[in-house]
Image (cartoon, rainbow, N blue to C red):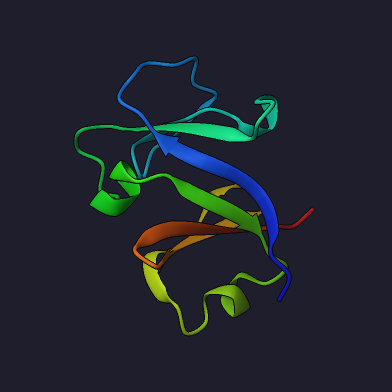
Amino acid sequence: MDYKFSHIGIPTTEEKNWDGFYEPGKIHYTDFSKDEYGVEWIKFDSDSPMPEMMQKLPHVAFLVDNIEEAIEGKEILVETFSPGEGVRVAFIVHNGSPVEFMEVKE
């Protein structure tokens, strides 16, 4: 399995110029591809169903070819979901921190 670094996600309580909102998770986010250092700022609404670890700790994200293979045998933090067309995402716990895997199909 190849893991290609994608970005780092940093939770914040500050308001930013948000690029999007993921309704099911109640997550506001910036587009990491617009940031010169690959930072994705994320802010969770107070009633977000996402795990506390994800809301409090930064995460690193990796692009993978096969998300099922990437999460096999891992401690799942957030089950696989699709935040947009052609994109599937899952979060695992690795050494006490969240790690995101992203599968992007064109």
